[in-house]
Length: 415
Image (tube, rainbow, N blue to C red; front, side):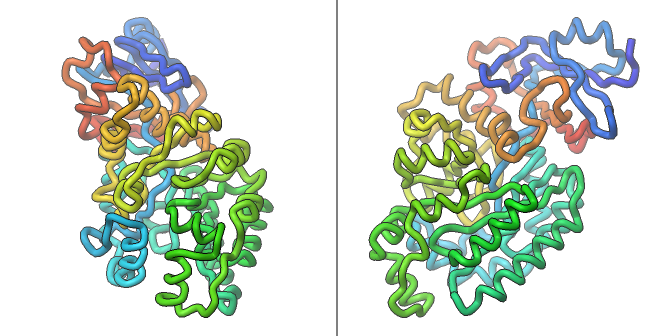
């Protein structure tokens, strides 16, 4: 018997492989190897217990990989009712008007956001940072963090300043780099980043081989602006930003081509057409934030269209600038009820894999699946009478509220 390996077991174990394998009365064994806590073996608990002394079985519980929240803005955690919902136009105007108040002191809200991630079973995040003020707290947290330094700004005269500010934030994040804090790069969107700035920043991403992320076609107004130079964004640039005779900085094809070969996380994409989704499928991943999309654009991503483009949807919470909380379970439940034409059993599996297996792949993290050699990032949820259920994924989403035990890199961060 091996006393250096820890074994945990539960009524149901969700492997979170592509076939969504479930082990009844299953177990996961893990130990430290080369400084990293890795999964050693997954199988029936009764069989594994014969080999491993240090064992714990959780009755009425589900074990699965910790969630991966691949797109979250911690910096806007102070927002409760400052911003307006019901339309992207209303929301963006309210952000421009009130963001300074929301961003004035983010120390407590970042810590609250970290706690909320852990309690909802999230072990890894793709954190989008526009200002860099959340870096230290995230690097000190138990979370596994891919930290996206975001470039934003479209004023030609300010490009040198914006690029310098980006470089300062990016290099500061590299000073914090560790096995669990990984610097990355984000472009805000095609309507908000000058082409010169975007190209300079993406060249760094290519040179350093870091992850990239971008908001893309989140609203109809964005598509209208990029295609015809007309509509709400034209008025926005003229009236709010005081730009005379504004023009788009790219067309849609030109913008996409900047990301060719970068394996980018494309976020929202609500108004992308089939050819654009095909491009994304070949050059990255698609992240959907259901509650944010409902609040700002009154719609959800078309899952059937994604399937046609061979895209596996990834689900994330976005930030509290467009959400009521950052709880991953609440996000998945919202999608469960939002996609009214989808089969419940199949949708439940799609949602869980979209918060485990596929976002881990997108972020290049060795987690998101309970498999030998992967990080021991594991969550345990109490689920009353789950052993009697023939719809375990659905019942998990319906009834789970707060993680019972959470391991990140084999260390228990919530007991």
